[in-house]
Length: 494
Image 1 (cartoon, rainbow, N blue to C red):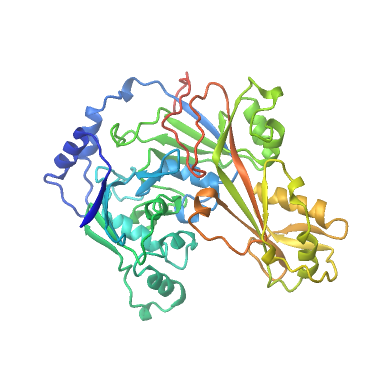
Image 2: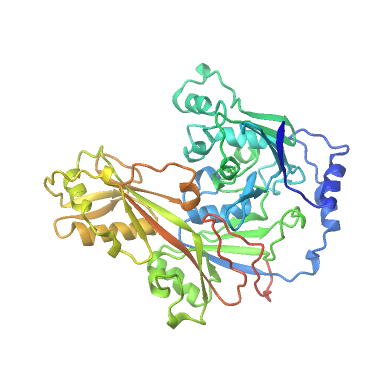
């Protein structure tokens, strides 16, 4: 007996699926573009007469790697949420809805998920494919992408979301800790089973009510095997997915340009976004980003930093009176999480004094928009020891971390000591503090432990008045482009 949860699409879409299946090979290598052209002919949204619409978006984290497994900050994940799809995505309330998935059946015991995928989706046209033409998605793409998360040369974050799949932990440990390939005996994850090109099954060790929500994580976006083939620069620099937007270029100044992919978006699957082109810009200094926004060179900042939030909003996230009418602020229900960790293996720093000094600190005065959670188990305040003149922290571009470390240095450790960043980005024997970041979505799914200080900050967006339909939502890592409206640009889109 199976419980069936089916996500319904329109009758027209079902007919398209049946039509595209006739006479079409199911091998993953074949390029079949027929559903793409037939769907465009039937669409009610006439792109040929639509005016060009462009949006310039400011981001507060550097976007340096387009590989979903390396998306280590929220700004990167927001950009990738437009390029890639996962099996599922999240709605404004944070509930999972289908993206690549078409429907799912869950066994009565909750241990098996059978997912039908939407095979009318194509990867973007990209040099990753020998022909340059994006091919139809295949269930083996999902299995391959998920098994890649276990490899030793990628971060382990995505793997934590998949550990409950039968055979995944064994495969992960073999890939990570058995260094001689000839001694490995596992050729994949036994609990990820491809039945046919449109059907994939997941067998779990224990029931998990959050399983489909985990599959919506940006760490589990789907991309083709060809994106990592030899001789191609790879998805780290040339991403290729099935999302509403495709990657165009990244300028030397860091500006990233995406264009809407009109070749495969279906009105009965997702609402088509109206913006044709998006430019993402990053600046090293938070004030530079805000000044460009104030000059109307940037249309929208999906998340402002701590300094900007103090400048333009009150503790409730509302615009201060001096800025009312100039632009709009939107406080989201999702939050950013920032973590500080003590490096207990640091042998060049007096950690006892450092822990003792922060044990009784009052962090509530640091920032009116942030919440501070101290993990007392990580602080040994029994003895003070001698203070080092300088404590080193691992380098990070995260402006939230840098702001908090500056506060700790100036308000807690001074005048006896201070905190300085070192060039190295990982903890070594000389590094006393290192940092990490997450968000409210992943905090509910991943067990983040070992921190001594957690900083939770609200996500507030700023937009100019002519950018309409910026809505509050509960998904920190996602950009909801579909409802956004901007005026048509009177310029050449090239």
